[in-house]
Length: 260
Image (cartoon, rainbow, N blue to C red; front, side, top):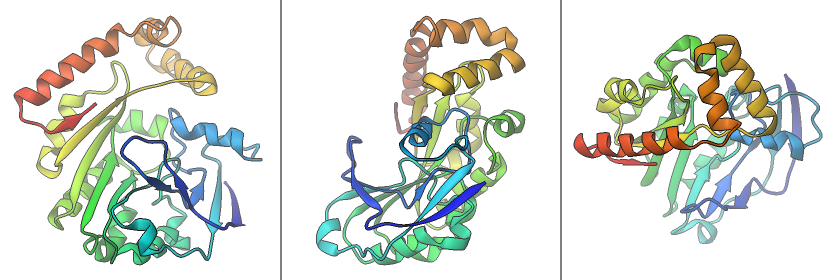
């Protein structure tokens, strides 16, 4: 793992994500190393030769957040990294940022896969308008281990439980939904007591990520390869079009708060 410490002026940037004003990315790169990660494009914007998941830059900054720049805004932490990646335990960049934010009047969304977020419960409970998003797309730990390096399924569900027990608003991001591998109904059944709402996003594959993922499917789930080829090589969206309707009907009939 290539680790670099960088001195930067800021760790905040304006957001191009709908509903988000600013994003906070205190790290570049992500040791989670998810094979399907949309943020792997960040490798092309850096001088790293390492594969995605094999490098991380630590953004060291003396920048201080000010109330005037935060009030009534919506911040996302983070958009291209996991702000609770394993290096956060040492560097505490996320914790230091949260300690600046606790008294501000704003909206904060934290996205992570890692239970390290529980370390900061003392700060999280002080933030009035907070939502924590945990990502999970399978209950099969073999699939999870094949595609991601860290954070077991069990630890994510336990994290949801603990956040809920501390009255923190939880969202489960069933993402990315992998055709024929993600059973969203089973995931909902397993987590519904600890989740306020569900977000769904479909697997998108581009360039090198597409090549790697299709090879993985061909090597491990050959029975699904032709279906994947239809979707990702022939651009046939029928599978996801039908799945979207199915998810909507399922959520509505079960009174589940959701977005796709």
